[in-house]
Length: 241
Image (cartoon, rainbow, N blue to C red):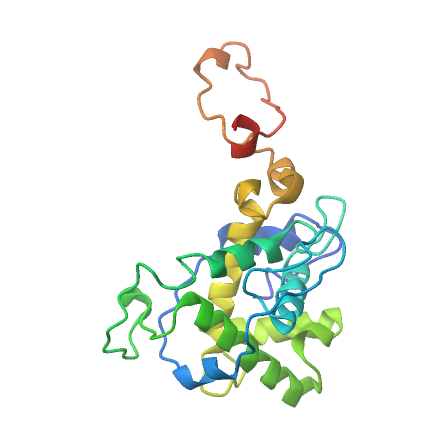
């Protein structure tokens, strides 16, 4: 999180600019032994509108992803917080899916440290990668702040994410910058994807940016809205089911 993209209470749109333009380039070697430190999957009760149980996330991981989502997307007059928008549910479903299990990934190696343009070069599945990242980040924040990431104050969480983004967080046997980029990408997807996938609850992000959703053919409306703003209630895949 660069200084330019630091959330600004006086400019709510600026607080989310980093979500609109950031990308990911997870291409750094990692010690696969870190993944073994992650807790086993378990059903996790959650407050509010989150599901009563998760498909794969542990209690520690739910707390981490909730804190990360709410730091990147704080509640304000534009949208609810990231977790209230369902991002943790989205993350859980993605990591429990075939994608999370690395179903279409080449995993026979060799796995070498490579330049970002060569793409993902790790032996871990996405599920294992995020599990290891949570373990490594919490271990680092305990050393620096004395607490797990989710227990930090809001300002400390921002500083921790900045350190990860800038590659300044000394995570043990793990690349913090690569983890941040992957975390940001998954958070972006959960915030802007169709609500049918668990995130973007009540189409909050679509309403924020004025995106109409699934309908994509407007040829019949060109004359009616020529030189006028087109405003419509967003529609998701579920609305057409």
